[in-house]
Image 1: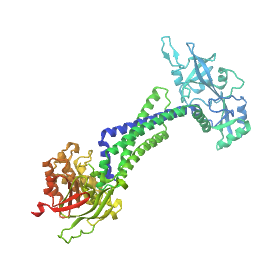
Image 2 (image 1 turned 120 degrees about the horizontal axis):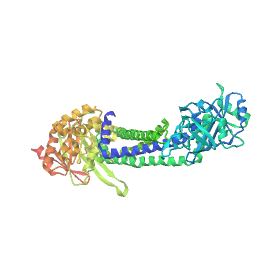
Image 3 (image 1 turned 180 degrees about the vertical axis):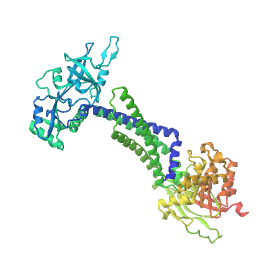
Image 4 (image 1 turned 90 degrees about the vertical axis):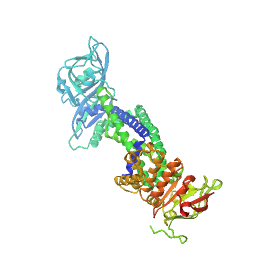
Length: 388
Length: 245
């Protein structure tokens, strides 16, 4: 077969108009499928970005009615002690998470996400500090602001109209309380893209509007060797609260957004469009390419090429355009994501699973087109060669 | 393959023997009987022309003989092999090794150059590309191609040149039977003459037979025998002046 492959490739590449048409169609399909899926994956990843950034805890304890991470149903502050008393818990710390308004220099307000960390341990802090240190939060009125927020929505407006990023030493007014920037951190962007402000738990409960209950989560660490599912069940039984492992809490949040927002439909529509573009443009062009070459396939058949040889020739042609179209599309999507990922706040995440999904989709498009072509060639009577 | 049989009549060996061959296209009221019991022999070493009006069944008959179309009835053996007793795969492989084709419309693959087109039958039969092209170049030289023409694509060649590539392609794998369907109908008289001269000189050998379907009376002189067909039957077979002289 290897020797027939050169005839197959020459037939394919020699018909430049169709060859390029098929490649362009597949490239667009691959680009659309990859890019839209990657944006969707990026946005969905942001829904549980807080959990991803807080690496230490194994178990998150919340009110049983909580449906996702931003669905805060405050707990009594004493729940921390109850969780600590459960067998198998190495440590447990309180965490505050809420939304509040930051007053800007020009008098406008900006919604921010406020995270209050355990005063003693500062567990739950940002994964990467760019300037300052996490322990600086112990300084009076100290807050740490995420880099995107500091450079963007919380940037100070200068008299000449330009904006200057927040830096260490700047003060911010949070719910009528003065806060001082003691560090700038890098975090995974949140779903809402609001600035994230870290402070201590006790200070967060001062900044935030007062309610009877202020505790958002209890973050707990299991003792070494402890079965996490069993520990979660034990915590639930002893405290009446709901305990999730980190992965379970991510899944809960992920599926909440999947179920209660229109995002999957929107993105699936875009992905389907990519698929349809692939099928209609590339599939149709590939089929036409075979129809145009039917006389030559018939000639090869008359000259002794078996159906198996012709089948492998068409499959090779389909695979070649699939690989090239896939490579160009995925490459273009990666470049696009890489550029906009660094020059904007675009949510773009391209895990290997998406590459596999796109590859399967492109392969499906090509094999569907090829199967129609193969059917035509298999049924071709070699006697067709004598018809002028 | 067994040795060809000898006909008692004139001592010539037989390449193709058709007895009562029938072929019908369609069924019921739409049935069209293209062959109505063809009896014909083609001898080894001869060029037999099959002539007759359009629609008389010439192309159907060579399709059956070449093994690209299954007959409905009668007997037809090619070097004593009966396609009806072979599987489709065996028939295809038999064609690949033993039959050469020359078509009215040349049927050269436009994206292959002349030497690659001519090499195609060898490649199909499993010869390595380099060896196949080398052999094809030898045959193309015999049909008068120079280096530049060998690298030309069919779109850059004249009709006569394309037909010469087709002849090279039909010969390159040394088939024992060559079937030609209207090989000169797309060519002017002079070019057609040259093409037939080439075929006669190159293609005919002591162990090879040629069947040429044609309308073109200008090339009758190249035939050893001329079989006249009408309405799905061979009505007469005449020795050509070449043979009788």
